[in-house]
Image 1 (cartoon, each protein chain N blue to C red):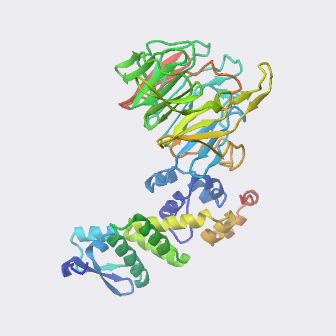
Image 2: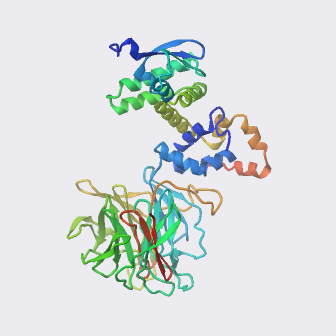
Image 3: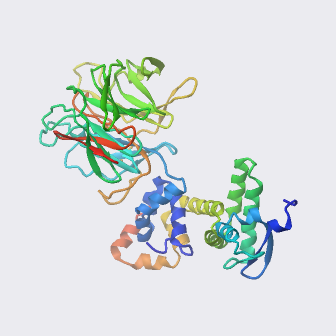
Length: 155
Length: 362
């Protein structure tokens, strides 16, 4: 990668103004950035609105790993993925939003898989608490029959 | 559906839900109304395909409990019960069954009890996307030679050329190397569908008779207590299946590399003994290994993992494989007619009562 010429590097600027120098091959793992590069409407510096430095650094780390490890064993990458996505819910959602918005398919897939794993191991009650938040009140009070029905947890 | 997961766009939330395996769907439906409608939506089915998380299931309907289909999940070795089949006929039997495009099609069929009014008997078979139905019995127990093809996407039936002959025995259909083959019990000939316009060719292969399963395009037959690989001209012994010799009415089906032998009944040792034992055991044979060995997996269950809360609610499944009646408590000399799908997938054939039609899908 060090052999990459300057012109093969792109600068990504996060929403809070921090800049990251990234090889183009890594940056274009985001379809949104790829489109911009292909349409040549990107200057050297590409703004990445809605994504702060913290999250952007994580996304870049993920993309770099995936770019480097193309030849590596798929199982290694899987381990990396599962460790990478194993974060608190807030960071997870920020990452998902970034991956979705910038269209980074591999990252989005890994993150969604992680959410699915979280759902899998939980009871109905815990799913409601963790994923529905404010809706919970609404659900529990919306009507009586629904309440009875809701009580039929499976576990 | 809105606000599936707080803090995430619905499109993304759906991609997350799509990665949850089907056996947990009944749990997810209880979370909230929006989750329930998301789980039941065609969008989820599409998303499951997109993220490559669709699953293969075996669909089995046993004699008892009547008209109740169950899914076998081979990855997790468990059974999932579907909503009851909405049929007016009790103990629907001798139907044709096919699955494609995430749906299970149960075609025709009649009552095992004598009930001439309702008996439209026929069999069916699947290729990739279209269903061919041929032969079978009319409601007056007459065998017929008509054939039709059905396109599930367009929901249309088209007639194709009739079978060359019919026979007063059960017939079945298999797809081998992309071609629909129709076999009648007791006949040495096989009728092969060459094309929707070309119609059927009769071949006298003299194939073995017995329960059949297709694995990776090759036909396997259980005959005289042995599993054979049936090739065009010859049959090769694969493995002994002597433990099934006394079983009647078992079902045999292929899924992936495995042959499943499901259910059936064993009649007591004395010939006139009315001691009929219904079995729910499932034996599996993995083809492809050097020495195939039988193993047992979870037996059929009834009401565990109930699928869907409301009876009759239609549920889309992922690619399902099909299977016909399991525990029938008498040998099925009667009924099923048969069909298959056209090799080029341009059409499907079907028999409806005394009417036979083929659907041109082009």
